[in-house]
Image 1 (cartoon, rainbow, N blue to C red):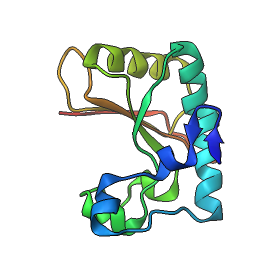
Image 2 (image 1 turned 30 degrees about the vertical axis):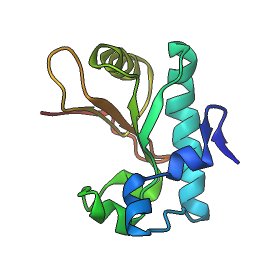
Image 3 (image 1 turned 120 degrees about the vertical axis):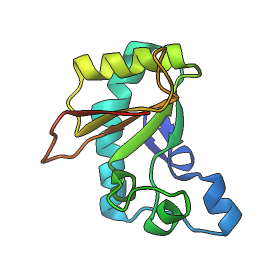
Length: 139
């Protein structure tokens, strides 16, 4: 099963931490719908523009898994509304970040760690009803 054209269900729910701790990381029906929405509104337009594969570092995380990885208690990953992506280098991740910032509607776009060259990965979230186009930098 696929979440979207370029994201498989397994890719969207896989977590080495979940495997290590025996956590069953499966979205419910609403979470799955949210995942499809963020994939179609954010990931797929980006992927088409970029023209190359983009690795999904983290997509859906249930509450138990989110706690294990030290995620925020309000993480949008837990509702299936956020994706962490990596194009393979900080320079390429900066391209993803800049394109998303200029071309997409989103709830949050986060430049995660990295340096002036670019982020270690890019976080983007999308909600059907409340997209505030908030841009954050985590150093």
